[in-house]
Length: 401
Image 1: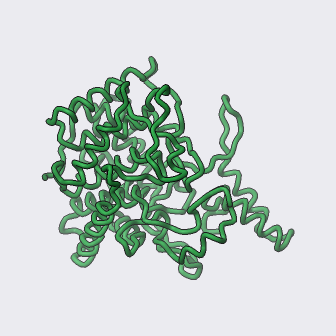
Image 2 (image 1 turned 180 degrees about the vertical axis):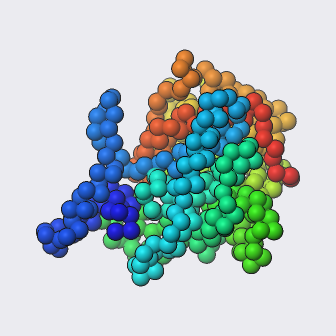
């Protein structure tokens, strides 16, 4: 009911409908539940009708705003920024969920979801990236977010932090590992509990740091202390989870390239210098994984066992993963010759792969979830290469070391 029957995902919605049908074939909400599944239908002229596992309107839009903010403000870019900065604030959840506490829901007011304003399941990193996008756009003269609503977003993120300093996605972790044995969707792994995800933690650390800097004295003193502590604990969690090779494993994207991209950005946002051991480790990792063609490429098969597994040598690098690696390296010391050269080779690869209409070709999917499912984010191949190229044209100011 809290989602207008679209549920968290079509998987959840279908399972709920089956449960209602098993309990009472005439259940008054069964028809509404079946109608809600239609929210997940997707159709185009090429591949016809299908059901998506998720919609990513807010998620994609937040990254697109950040990419456009770092590039030239062409008429097309300005039109996009105006439209996106008008819509993103309207997608923020501004109400408390009815009976939320009674049904053990974490406070949801102030958050952004993964999909759109019709899908009130807000997420920690979606909220953090929306904050980053809107405040960055505000610096460029587009849109903005009233302080009261920014404070709501900050409080929402804080509610998602786990005791170990990391952040979950929809809520903090609850329950024990015993719950893994009750998984009704047996094809997915690690889907019964929240964890301290590398990407969520990194996005939340960066988003909280950006909000803290933007609000300044407008942030109440008690909340300021909570934010300071949350950032400190989040950074400690990120530093502790670094792989011995210098990278960070991802959970929602493939794989170490994805996780490392987020963490490097977060650590730079809180002021860690490129000479910090964690960032020199990240630099070492990224440089060691650049391929002969100038790009980067990991295989999804590494998600099955948590390993860093490169693509076969006879396959070309992937533009999305190349863009992630370049964006991370651009946050580091570009004056160092190995970093500068690696960035240039990555940029050359992105330019070579760009098609005549300005787009990049569809390649292997770069998203994943619950260890076994590969997810195609179709806009990733446009947004992240554009972002890397835009940053190369003119680097935005970095936080002081």
